[in-house]
Length: 160
Picture 1 (tube, helix red, strand yellow):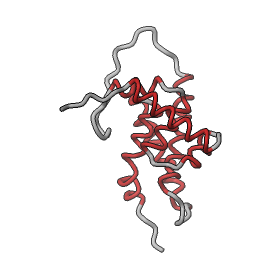
Picture 2 (cartoon, rainbow, N blue to C red):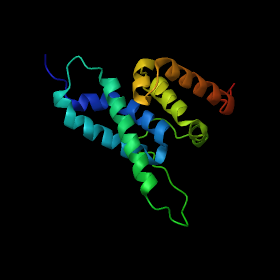
Picture 3 (tube, helix red, strand yellow):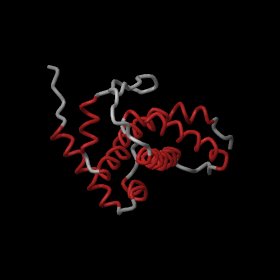
């Protein structure tokens, strides 16, 4: 069996990984986590089993890189005065919606991650449970509660 070129993996799964990173970390740190995810994946790709679930493998790496970015940010000094942050639109699929990000940010950590991993990455609850160190039932509940909360606090306007 021939090994699929890594560039094809990035092209296919890159947008999904970026959406997950944005949902978990926010738009300011998502691109760094995305880059770190694919750097780590590129190093490990030659040893990946041909039968591996690439999507789940990449989300697992993204989850770990998101933890690294959050740790780094928690250790960084915070300036007393800051300019408003300008979010880059380059490389981010779709339109940035600050209201949606605010709604996602308001969710508890496990709910936000469960929503991102299930609804944006398409992972089954059993794999999400492993990432979040809980049971599949707890992962399912966190995703459902997160979606219910998002529907309550972020209603989409009907354009008609």
